[in-house]
Image (cartoon, rainbow, N blue to C red; front, top):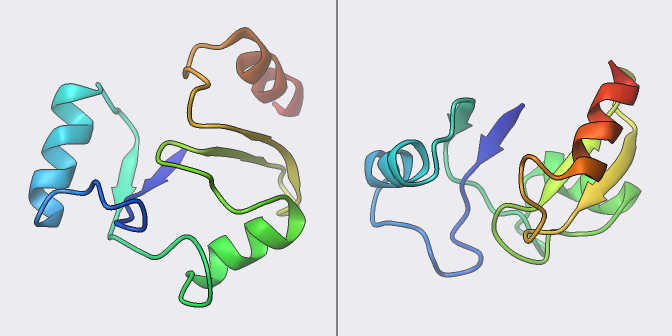
Length: 96
Protein backbone atom coordinates (compact mmCIF):
# COMPACT_ATOMS: atom_id res chain seq x y z
CA UNK A 1 0.00 0.00 0.00
CA UNK A 2 1.29 3.43 -0.91
CA UNK A 3 -0.17 6.91 -0.72
CA UNK A 4 0.25 9.99 -2.86
CA UNK A 5 -0.77 13.42 -1.72
CA UNK A 6 -2.26 15.83 -4.24
CA UNK A 7 -3.59 19.34 -4.07
CA UNK A 8 -5.87 18.71 -7.05
CA UNK A 9 -8.78 18.87 -4.60
CA UNK A 10 -7.48 22.01 -2.84
CA UNK A 11 -7.20 20.42 0.59
CA UNK A 12 -3.51 19.74 1.10
CA UNK A 13 -1.38 21.43 3.73
CA UNK A 14 1.15 24.09 2.74
CA UNK A 15 4.07 21.66 2.65
CA UNK A 16 4.80 17.93 2.49
CA UNK A 17 5.87 17.70 6.13
CA UNK A 18 2.53 19.08 7.29
CA UNK A 19 0.65 16.78 4.89
CA UNK A 20 2.56 13.79 6.29
CA UNK A 21 1.72 14.86 9.84
CA UNK A 22 -1.98 15.08 8.97
CA UNK A 23 -1.93 11.63 7.37
CA UNK A 24 0.10 9.89 10.05
CA UNK A 25 -1.29 11.62 13.15
CA UNK A 26 -4.89 12.48 12.23
CA UNK A 27 -5.69 9.45 10.08
CA UNK A 28 -3.33 6.80 11.46
CA UNK A 29 -1.67 6.12 8.12
CA UNK A 30 0.97 3.42 8.49
CA UNK A 31 2.05 3.06 4.85
CA UNK A 32 4.58 5.07 2.85
CA UNK A 33 3.49 8.48 1.60
CA UNK A 34 5.10 9.95 -1.50
CA UNK A 35 5.66 13.49 -2.71
CA UNK A 36 2.72 15.52 -3.90
CA UNK A 37 1.63 14.84 -7.50
CA UNK A 38 -1.23 15.75 -9.79
CA UNK A 39 -3.77 12.95 -10.03
CA UNK A 40 -6.27 14.38 -12.52
CA UNK A 41 -6.26 16.02 -15.92
CA UNK A 42 -3.48 16.78 -18.36
CA UNK A 43 -0.92 17.37 -15.61
CA UNK A 44 -1.60 14.02 -13.91
CA UNK A 45 1.43 11.94 -13.01
CA UNK A 46 1.93 9.08 -15.50
CA UNK A 47 0.94 6.55 -12.84
CA UNK A 48 -2.41 8.25 -12.35
CA UNK A 49 -2.96 8.65 -16.08
CA UNK A 50 -2.57 4.89 -16.40
CA UNK A 51 -4.80 4.17 -13.40
CA UNK A 52 -7.48 6.44 -14.91
CA UNK A 53 -7.08 4.79 -18.32
CA UNK A 54 -7.71 1.39 -16.78
CA UNK A 55 -10.43 2.54 -14.40
CA UNK A 56 -11.29 6.18 -13.71
CA UNK A 57 -9.64 9.28 -12.30
CA UNK A 58 -9.95 9.74 -8.56
CA UNK A 59 -13.03 11.71 -7.62
CA UNK A 60 -11.67 13.00 -4.32
CA UNK A 61 -8.96 12.47 -1.70
CA UNK A 62 -8.36 8.98 -0.33
CA UNK A 63 -9.51 7.27 -3.55
CA UNK A 64 -8.22 3.70 -3.63
CA UNK A 65 -7.03 1.51 -6.50
CA UNK A 66 -6.35 -2.18 -6.17
CA UNK A 67 -3.67 -3.24 -8.63
CA UNK A 68 -2.57 -6.83 -9.27
CA UNK A 69 1.01 -8.06 -9.67
CA UNK A 70 0.93 -7.38 -13.41
CA UNK A 71 -0.10 -3.76 -12.92
CA UNK A 72 -3.75 -4.21 -13.89
CA UNK A 73 -6.37 -2.28 -11.96
CA UNK A 74 -8.76 -4.91 -10.63
CA UNK A 75 -10.90 -2.61 -8.48
CA UNK A 76 -11.34 1.01 -7.51
CA UNK A 77 -12.96 2.31 -4.35
CA UNK A 78 -14.25 5.84 -3.77
CA UNK A 79 -13.02 8.11 -1.02
CA UNK A 80 -15.88 7.21 1.28
CA UNK A 81 -14.75 3.58 1.43
CA UNK A 82 -13.14 3.01 4.82
CA UNK A 83 -9.82 1.14 4.96
CA UNK A 84 -11.50 -1.65 6.89
CA UNK A 85 -14.49 -1.91 4.53
CA UNK A 86 -15.48 -5.57 4.07
CA UNK A 87 -15.59 -5.37 0.27
CA UNK A 88 -12.19 -3.67 0.08
CA UNK A 89 -10.61 -6.15 2.47
CA UNK A 90 -12.11 -9.11 0.58
CA UNK A 91 -10.75 -7.77 -2.72
CA UNK A 92 -7.26 -7.38 -1.22
CA UNK A 93 -7.33 -10.84 0.34
CA UNK A 94 -8.44 -12.35 -2.96
CA UNK A 95 -5.35 -10.95 -4.68
CA UNK A 96 -3.03 -12.17 -1.96
